[in-house]
Each structure stands twice: as structure tokens, then as C-alpha cells.
Image (tube, rainbow, N blue to C red; front, side):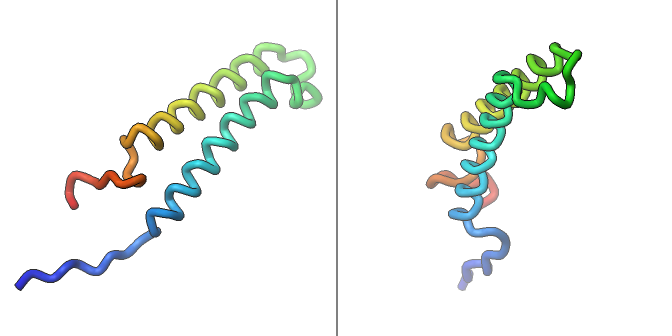
Length: 82
């Protein structure tokens, strides 16, 4: 008789909530960079605004794609080893 192994770790709902929260944070940081919110820190470095905004936005979109397309476990899809 095979028994189901005891699951340990973070529940999937918390992983999904954390993933969505991080997507919002990355996209928000990208928007703040693009809108010049951090110009007080880098007043003469205009390129930091565009590079930082682009990187945060691109990574936020990549995380959103992975979260919702099913590359990351969650939302009904499982890992290969389960």
C-alpha cells in the first residue's frame, strides 16, 4: 500500500498571492522609474531612469508570463516530479 507523502512547504495559494504581489511591485517600480520618481537620487543620471524602468518592467512582465502561463507551479498545474 502506497501512502501519499506528507506535504511540507508553502501552500500553493500563498505562492500564488506572493507571485502576483511581486508582479505588481516590479511593474510599479518600473513605472516609478519611468515617471521620474527617483530623480532626486540620480539627478544627473538620466540613463538610470530608463534602464531601471526598462529592467523592472521587463522582469515584471516575465514574472507575469511565468505565473499565468503555467511555467511556475500553481494555478492547477503541477511539477514534473509530482
